[in-house]
Amino acid sequence: MSAATVSIIQGSQDLFHAVFALGVVVAVVILVLSYVVRTAMLDILMVLAPLAGLCSVLPERAATRPPGSACSWSPSSCKRSS
Image: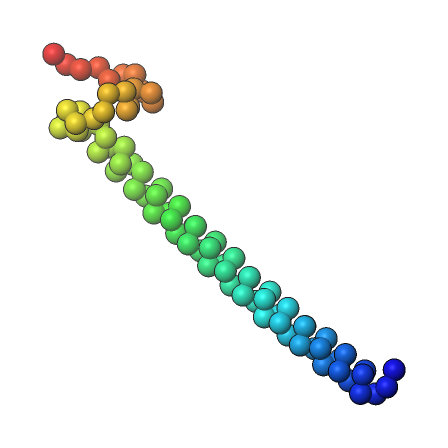
């Protein structure tokens, strides 16, 4: 092979390596961002879960609750006082 052909092949390989490295960096950034967002959402949901549980057993909520919504979790929560 001539020196010009070798030079062209090396240039194209360098370009491929640069594009590949850029793709890897973008993929890692997306992966890290998704991990951070997922962890933040999980933390928020863990903090708010007890409040949501307390709100679902309030007496004024019982009148608007669809039938059987909480009964599948805890049959004792479906007892209605008459």
